[in-house]
Length: 386
Length: 100
Image: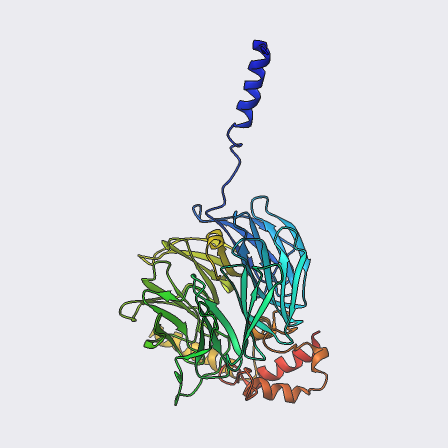
């Protein structure tokens, strides 16, 4: 069959159109992120290269102690609210794409390695609920009769979390048709938070009720609890704890894990393979976050009330504090850019997010935010265990 | 001389501050933000229990003041005595009993 030249030209035109460039207004999300505004139930969409906020998304409920994970395409932020709200926010269109109230009192979540499942950790009713990442429909309910903490994702569509009241760690495996739960007892008294390394191998629970931390090797067929840093505060008076530390997947600094002590003004170092103590660093106050830079070369630490106006920077090799500065009242959270050239800091009571160069320590930007707390860049989408 | 005057002024201010006077706005913020670290910004509970008025029916203001000042041994509730005065603790106890 012969096509008339005019029709052929039209067809080529259509084909050309369908391969045309996207409109100039399209924006990639790789250097975007969000800042939680904890008192007003909103978040700011932020732009790393512009050092600025692009706009606000409101109506997210009680965001005190909120956290965020991202879809694999870095377009959707799943926001876990304190009031049991689970919101899926489209950060390009800056609107809520879906939102449910899934529990009464919640404390963070995780997303499976394939991006299909979102899990939420609940205090009330105690347990973990798992949702379809597209629709937010309930996929599984795992009641525990206990507050759950330290929920993380590990490879193989698995989630790991710990029971505050029972001192057990559960592994929920969604790799098969029927979800399978493995329970590990003997974690210790009052596990307040936990972390997993980016490779999904080492899970470390911090304890409020005992003078050690507990590690699990998740590569083992039967992970067994192992005490680490046993007796780190022995014969020393425990200071009142006005804020529980956070344990996050940023603990690996070079060959060591760096961990916040409970009730002491120090961070603790353990060898990442032997899990034996390698040192301690005295700090300005009780650490809340002890976060290794992405390259591991330095560790940035913020502190509990009432010493929470200060950040200290520790050199990983010497374990010495090499820099101290005061961003302002109530430093709640810090987030590194993916390759660590900048750190963004929430200064809640100043109503500011401040941006620092991690090598020179110079402040290089800031913008206003309403009681800012957690800062989350989209690069988290491609890292496990956060 | 000027620095001495400033010092004296500050010392006087600090003394007045130590006495019965306190700042209710700052205290309320402390309750919401810092007590809220464990009890939730809305005080309905987190790792710590619900401390809204309805949940505190069995407690007197004196009980609550004592717990705030000296903590509850065997639980994560810390003593706040190093940070606040008895008057401030009494104010917080009353605040909790009046806020749902």
